[in-house]
Length: 409
Image: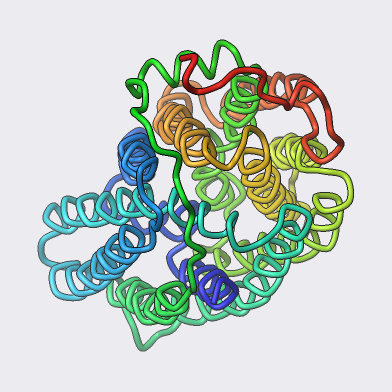
């Protein structure tokens, strides 16, 4: 059930890829890179908002699946409304489309934030730590194969003479809506392992967060590394626009870039899953951050279609490596009781990441793409250095051990 959900989710979202399809769609309504970055930031930032509240609620629950189910199907409905709005009003009322677009994708994003903590908690209870790398890797490998095919279909739909703008994008959103129904059905059938929470009054949430960040360095280092490595989001929404505006590549070639990114993800899973299971997540994180650095470097110097494809190959390597690495890292540090809280802390404090596209848009509008890429390289380099402060939970590093009780907080 976990694989059905993960593979179909990757397949469905490839038709509406947030950093490839959506920026070009929004570019048809506004030429301002700042506004494009702002809209993507608003859409993505919603996932961070509810996580601490959900983690607090889950501290006293034996099962978290009911929370997950409600969030999933609300997310699904949001995509259906997006497809309808784009089809019906896309040509005649662009302002309404942009407002609805931001509103429904914000709902989709907030639903993701609600679903994230119970989802990872269910996976952690069901799959042992030494097999999670294989699970994530298999999920992302198969999902990547489907997403490569989706990239080709995106090219066919966007270049089709039978569908004009915005009907072609409405079709992409509708396909996402249909495939997500399969994905969410799989996760709805996931058999959750019941967890017996410890009884007793929990300290105030903010006090817990401050204490854990102060007394448990692996959590703070993980959060900082996570933020800086995902500073790739500064440049990511603008890789496609740079290719279109500066390198004069046709918009229909977005499909090739999606396929290149998914191909990189597929290849990387053969590496990341093995490293995660045999060595540990911290090592995966270091490798993933280096891929982010290579992606921006290649964007800065590429001058042909084939060399620019490597940008997206490296992005694919980073995205899947970071997903496996950080997911397993925050699942393995601490203990089972603190897992939902640590996941929510990492997700909530990652909030600045979702505004990197906005900052990127400001930089492009005022200083150009070159300055954006150079700034991004500096931030990723700092993240790479910080990644060497992460302990390796699988190796039994003493730094990963918690030496205090939650009742001491």
